[in-house]
Amino acid sequence: MNEDRFWSLVSLKLSGEAQPEEIAELEKLLQQHPELGLRADMLDTVWQSKAETPAENIEASFNKHMQRLSNHFAEPVLQYENAIPEVGYEEENNVRPLFRKKLLWVAGIAASLVIGWFVITDLPGKTKQVSQHQAQNTVSTKRGSKSKIQLPDGTQVWLNADSKITYNENFQGKLREVHLTGEAFFDVERDETRPFIIHTNAIDVKVLGTSFNVRSYEDEKNTETSLIHGSVEITLKNNPDKKIILKPNEKLIVKNNDMQLVTKKPEAKKPDIRLPLLTLARVNYQKKDSSVIETLWVKNHLAFDGEAFEDVVLKIERWFDVKVTITDERLKKVLFSAVFDEENLQQVMEALRITGKFKYTINKKEVTIGR
Image 1 (cartoon, rainbow, N blue to C red):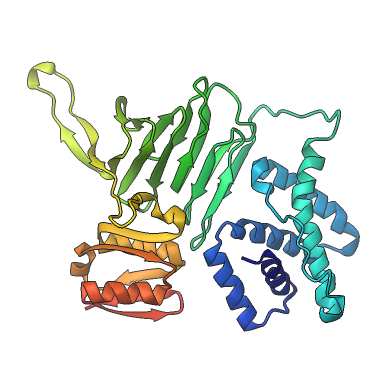
Image 2: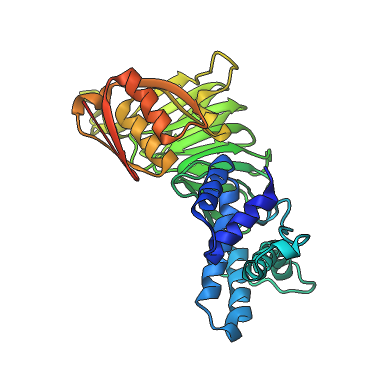
């Protein structure tokens, strides 16, 4: 991909000078390279704050914004290649004057997002203030976008659409802890002295150093952990004494709402307790290349593997940032298996229609499905 072209399109959009075909081109680039979405969002935030701030207060406002960014993102999130776009520097005569001025401003901000971090955090002799309550870093993705970040310990995290992780700013102490809502793939930097723990609504996942996928959306029925390498220890929130050790290529599925009644014998004279219904399974592989289906989303592939249509549409909603309504209740239980690579919403729906024999309509960001 030509990053110069990307930054040129971002600048045109921010300045309000982008043509419809240029906006469409930018959206396509963001779909193909979701990791760029975070940078574009950061620039948009700074641009909007600039537009709302009197000229004499722009510098002070920007410095304050940089302070907020330094507390919000881990350092590696702000370190990326080609931090200073050079669009238009060589072709002064071919760039519109107003656009060129705004383009230079955007390029400067892109550089400042990196430089400002070091200015704020690495000044010699700077006294670091530590509050009683440790600051929290939160990194999130919107529907229709994905992102890859690096935590302070070197752990790599891929965030799927509509997901969020939170962790302490300094990431120090005996434990490395993150809180996850949504789906993420973790490649954890090994540290036997400091276990890495992922907290979700249903489970806690404890590792020392390994690769695995965790899916825990609040509006889904299940929480899934799929282990690729190493080992993980899973603790159930509703029963902390219950721990499950996963081996490579195993997957644990925990029902978020459905509960299984486990009755003690009468002589035990103990009350009934309720435990989550668990399923231990194997991860699924594609036959053609042995790729793990549960982690294909990291490679920008939308995959379904024997999933009910009501669960499939939840993935479609997040993937394409749309609202899907199924009007026929019988369709919700129909099972689908498919893998899509770069297909758009229309192409995905058409492929599913042929298999499921249903009808659908697409009206902007709303999809209606029925018989």
